[in-house]
Length: 395
Ligand code: LLP
Image (cartoon, rainbow, N blue to C red; front, side, top):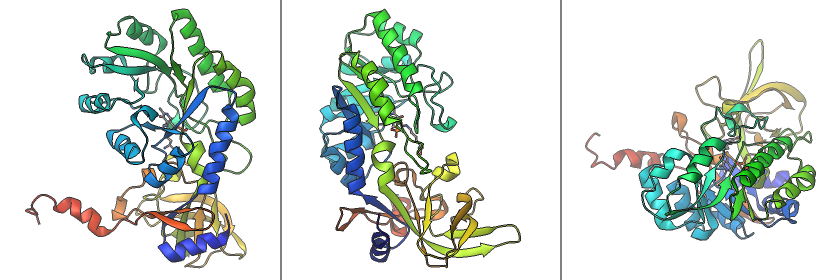
């Protein structure tokens, strides 16, 4: 991305600011579609990665559906013009209210996470898939692995067998679902998971209408070439999946939007103590929590051409963990310089909070020419309004 765009965006919309490159998003969508093109497939965008409605509409225009995990994500998907038959519902611990809402909407499929969830459907009709937990190590950060037996998601094969045997007639078992984790770069865990599902389907004689293999495709945060092995996926996984002879559904989040997103912020202070240098930004863990939460690596670019230095880079939150990078080599900044954090288009804004009463940043999209404001910056009044709703009696 051309630096001038970062300067222009910061000048016009202030910092901290999320900027999305629509060209990159389109490139990623095509890359995923090209990898899978010999399969009968459909991609559903995992909205937890990014739920900005403008971006959702953009993604939808490429024939992609939506994977939602809450009523509000469902409503946002509908607002972004996804039709119910283009929406898959996921999530563990769904409440009765959640299920009532989803069933009435009649989405393409509801993924059932547990044996216990089956009872919550009562006698209502629904088209479901069972989420299988195949007990496979995806070799990713423990906080984002989901398909191990110690994880809370899905059901083991034995439980799935029992659920299938005792399934009430109002529930139509249309498919199986399996998502083993996120930011996966090796294909072996997928081979292991999908092969065990294949064995299960054969041994139980299950007639599938589709197989949903979740998401998890990793991206190259470190820019060292470690990312999802697409060539390997095409060569080894695609043939494995075509053996199922049914449409294969994918729930990709990170892969579609991460590399298209930048968090543009301003350096507020360059601070030195006898041990270390600290560069403090006007963005913080409230705007982007991945480094604090998962020790996640994000490239950080200081927009000047000064000498290099080694420094920690952090935010303004009163918490030691509010650090974006430790001992990182960067250009020596001056207060007021721009710092751009890369690859934040997934799990960036969608995980932002109001900690320390931080206001959520604005979001803009860049279409190759124009900057388009796609979400306003939050204001203090927006937060205060929530506290004032109750007849104001406590103030
Ligand atoms: N399907 C299911 C059922 C999921 O739980 C997830 C992500 C996805 C699809 C999409 O996975 P992706 O393609 O984006 O890897 N906040 C963490 C990531 C948590 C992912 C949770 N589930 C992060 O910032 O790395």
